[in-house]
Image 1 (cartoon, rainbow, N blue to C red):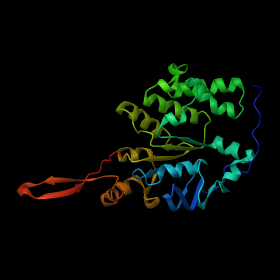
Image 2 (cartoon, helix red, strand yellow):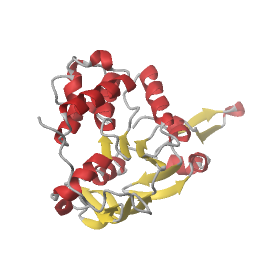
Image 3 (cartoon, helix red, strand yellow):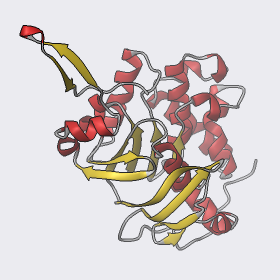
Image 4 (cartoon, rainbow, N blue to C red):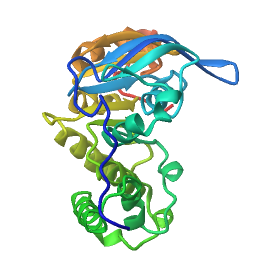
Length: 282
């Protein structure tokens, strides 16, 4: 591997004023089942966004489209003012800077892990971007320290705990220092300690230069990790607001299956249903 090769130049290399992503009337289906239904929204630069909704509401599909892994059947999407299409991503002048600037961490880390060791996993992205050997080694070692997984560098990622696997996948994305971070259910399937560590990391992103879009239905963490929320139902955004504004609407949360009503027996034998503001795993 020789010296680092300059990435092809592109008009998206320099940040533009306006939103990072602009999604307009996007429709997408899996096997004739609609996942996104004429969805429109904008992702502002430098904000932490939470996508809230039950499974099947379209959150993960949107993240895949934002990362250029799927493309709308109808509608359009732009990244920093440029059309984000399959054709554009075949052009290395667009694709290289886009892949460096935008990173997606999947809900299931096993989908993302494929290298023989943790070090190789985190080094894969920089090697694809043709960084020098010295730069790759330094960047990977630093990231392993930041994510507190340096002791795992020679281990197979497939034999780690779920929490460790999630740290490896996150490290493999963060090593490229992306400006936009897309996270799909980052605390799902984690034990309480690992979930707390992940939340602490996400809180630490507050006030930084990154735009962070997090898909979750864990309402307990939303106020800590997000500035703004989009609430999804059946492939559409049915509400927007700050975390505090959304959490003050129990009827909305119940309608979108983010909380459930529980029945209680009161004095005198009367039974009533009340929504409780705690999230359930779907």
